[in-house]
Length: 171
Image (tube, rainbow, N blue to C red):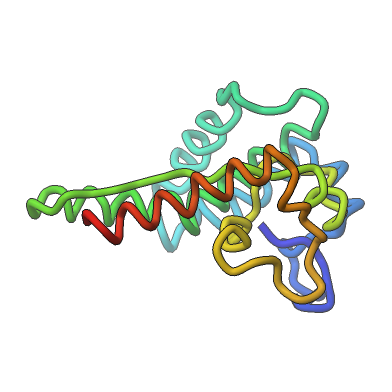
């Protein structure tokens, strides 16, 4: 999900949204975005309204969200994460498994407090796209100053590196 920044076109109608809009995202906003960008007539033909209802119901009934954060912002971010990353990766894994390949899959959700505060992402929980790369490549120039001696950060880094080393060794 995109928030307004110098890197994105701020004149777009639906996304990106400003931090202020994100903090105050309502059910009406969520429904409007789903209808305009996801459950379109182009994608669903005459079933667009039914598709929108099912998508909205699915995300509104999810239970694993932080009650201290804006619920509709969280489910909007999850929807776009699912569309952009999760669903394509799961489909690819299913196709490869059906073709007889061994499949390895992981979910990275570690987000130390320094990343949230450094990126001013107090409105979201969890790891953002690419947060896991710091474990192997280090923090990009201008990135958050991770304390690799912090036991929690060091533990996750070691686990992540071991995961890839073991995969390289054994497939």
